[in-house]
Amino acid sequence: MIAYFSKVLSASWAICQGLWITLRYLVKPSITVQYPDEKLAPYERFRGALLFDADTCISCSLCVKACPSSCIALQNVMAPDPKNPEVKKKVAKVEWYSIDFGKCNFCRLCEEACPTKPKSVWHSLDYEVLFARREEMVRGWKKGFEYVGRWFDPKTKDWKEPERHLQVQSVQARR
Image (cartoon, rainbow, N blue to C red):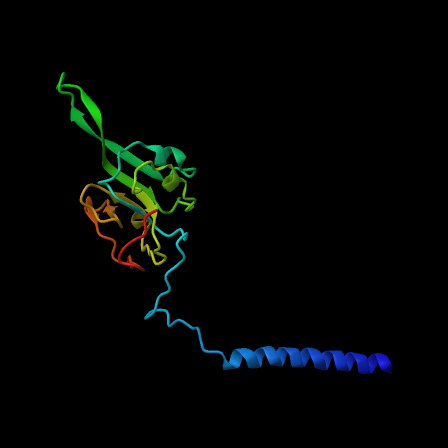
């Protein structure tokens, strides 16, 4: 009989503790974010979509070598050699740069390998990158493209702006 009453008492105490926790949170102010209208800025070390700046890239290919999933590709600018115009030499500028977000595992090794200051490739704070087709997952950059990049449409053979890329912050953080 004592065991029965001790169980009832311990269960009652557990219910009172649970109700006390509920009552404490009931009177606290709400911290709900109304998502489509309000957006939270992620922490500084958040690994969002990769962005690229063709102006600061020196085309060293360290990001390509550091990528474990082989999702980065680039091509150097080729200029004629002043001594021999028939021979073309690589210049320390990038002709085009592409990242396949379908293969990328957001490991940040490409950003760490980049020797330029500020980084030419970096993770943004964007978490709302949407892709409607597989072709849109391969983002490409050339000189003059925005940081977000463009995707190549094989049907029209033209670079197109991403339609559904919503930026969390207008100025992207660079490390």
